[in-house]
Length: 191
Ligand code: FES
Image (cartoon, rainbow, N blue to C red; front, top):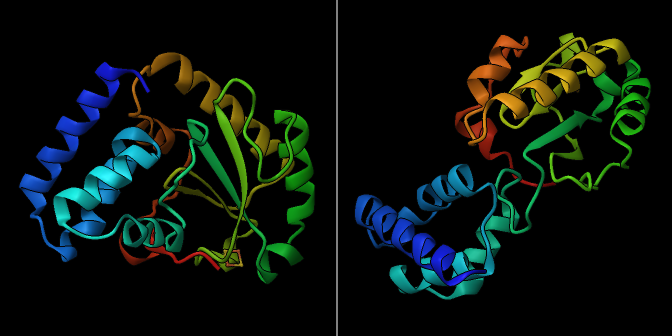
């Protein structure tokens, strides 16, 4: 990481700690904001947060690995998560999965070489009657067919060209997302 980047990140973490407090309950909101603004939480960020909160970096790491929406690795600008739980499975999620892999040229668990897309599996996101369901970042899309998966990827590509910063969620709503995942579901623990 460049020195300037590190200084900027250090400043951001100081601001977050000033705003949320420097006690253990502040850890999760600080990490959520870091995730939102940076797209992931680096080793450097983990150590800086731990230092400000006077806790061990392992504690920060264990919180990040517990929650599905906190990443300790850099992921694509668009993280596409396809539900693989039983209702979506029975509604032919495999066809959608094949389309996504073919379209993006990566397998589940991988990120495209240009850093735009990460493909992941998800567990139930509460849309079982409208499956197959998938999420792009925090936006949920339902009743996904291979054709719809293609359209969503094309929307993401257009959004990438239009929005240089990470402000794509509103644009995704326009692409047909049915719900922004927030609250407890957004903090769904990894299984
Ligand atoms: S089983 Fe896929 S959303 Fe519930």
